[in-house]
Image 1 (cartoon, helix red, strand yellow):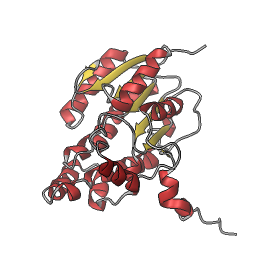
Image 2 (cartoon, one colour):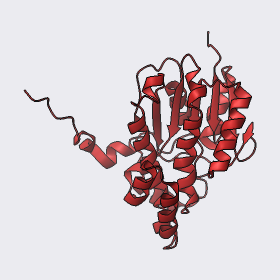
Image 3 (cartoon, rainbow, N blue to C red):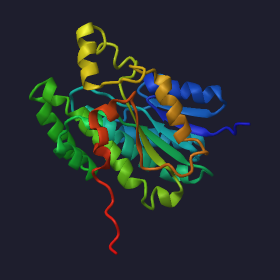
Image 4 (cartoon, helix red, strand yellow):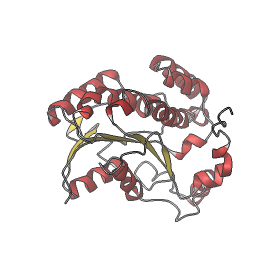
Length: 271
């Protein structure tokens, strides 16, 4: 028998977030959705004011106890706001809910990253994000955006790379592991959502996307293929998986990186 849990889902109005919220409700969990509209909590996660408001309203709606957070809110436009939403809109929102998570018997958190973490990035944006310097990250992103959409697009992979690295860094700290909270990321490939509809509208654009994101296993994926993994990562059954960015991408990571994931192996202990 499934024990009902209280979930907070950002980006709950569409795409993967809507799918996650729907699956949770179907199995009897309580869901507090966070989005710009059509959600229990309507807030703009691109600003500190919006994040603080979201945290306050979530705490009020949950009586201060949250079992799990699934952070799906994100955008891909070649503008600085992408960094504000995709990185700071996740990390600062989650940090604001730490005490509410701590009150759960089995707190869990998962965020949506992207296989775009494997694409070229702006190291300046990544570094600023990891230093929690939003002003600098947005300044760099604005400078890139001024050079046109192709260069401005760097805001997207940079924000997602920074998010996955943040998950890796934070997962073993006292704030997260010390509170017994597994913290993970899922990196999808090309997901069939409203955000990708225009991107996949012509044969030429599909060919371009598939060249950048090769998915030999089953091709473009449904939101459900991502949501089901997010549900397991945030279930009480997950007791030890933490700090991982799981590439749920039809093989894109394996094609693009091959064995490269092993180049940073831990050195043997001195004998």
